[in-house]
Amino acid sequence: FIADEFYPELVALPGAGAEAKAHTRPLPREGACGVAVLSASHNPSTDNGVKFFGADGGKLGDSDEEAIEGLLDLGQKVALEEKVVSKDFSCERGAFDLYRKRLLGIFGENFSLRGLKILVDAANGAAWFTTPEILRGLGAEVEVMGAEPDGTNINEGCGSEHPEGLMGAVRKRSGWMGVAHDGDADRLVLVDEDGRRVDGDEVIAMAATDALERGKLAGGTVVVTVMSNLGLDEMITARGGKVVRTQVGDRYVAEAMRRGGFGLGGEQSGHLLFLEDSPAGDGLLSALKILDLVQRKKRRLAELRKEMRTYPQQLMNLRVRHKPAWESVEPVARGVREAETFLGQKGRVYLRYSGTENLVRLLVEADEIDKIRSVQEKLVPILKEHLGER
Image (cartoon, rainbow, N blue to C red; front, top):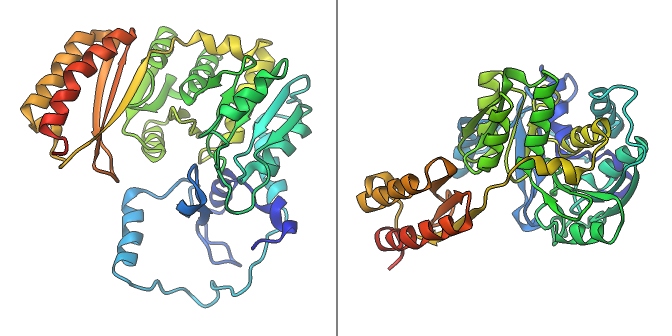
């Protein structure tokens, strides 16, 4: 329902976060003190929802979201001042130019991507115009796929959630790299010159080690979730840095970063945070950070990513009949303790329930795949017996 002429002004989600931070007081005209974004994020269009950003440019916390949901659950209407409500759809001109100016200002006027060949998969989403346009403006040779949004095809077999098409396309070219976003472009998955996927952990590892070498990693620390690979910890600590882990969710990563005064963090999924430069995840900013690194070091992405040893990981989802604290179910707790003893410092077990489904998620990570299988063979039957469906 949005006219074609408005498309260039529909900046990716990260632009909304930056816009919110730019207005720390209510805007005189709109009477606003935050930003609401209609987005399916990395999901199909049928899962469209609303993301809210506060005046600091970050996502609202759990308590604020729960308060809003509580009003909706009670069927209460939220009273709005008459001046805030508009009957007409309008487009604020200049949004893209503002976003581009802020983004490029991070890197300086001499920043260039000349000589790089980049294939972009925009997931038929918000970055279909912004990412290719900015990369071309920096001198890169750019080709684009997943750039025909029709309102229903967002993330449909493309983008960071489905990088197989991009990987195959890169393999057919010589010397190209791939950049993939999700629908609202706050995530980044890279594809190296050999057509292999580079996930969020590897991107964080490259960015963190580069920052450590230059003395620019705030607090000497990166913040990741419990799902991140142990190889990331090894690489960072070997270079004198520290790794802090949080529960799954970029908002928890952001909260820990703000509390500790840290600048770099993110998730394996490719949702990365450079809080010194942007208040929210920005897939294009993340890509530019790594492309800048590639240019400065004059090395292929395929070489740089090899510096992190990636431990084998396997995640299993098992249906459960109920969700007691698994630590209180002695056979389960004992099984986890025995698995952790068996793996020692070269592996780990992580067990958690899904927040939306009757599932328990079992992550096993080790330096050898046979160790993972051994743990699964012993632990899965215990989980099925004491937590599983009957």
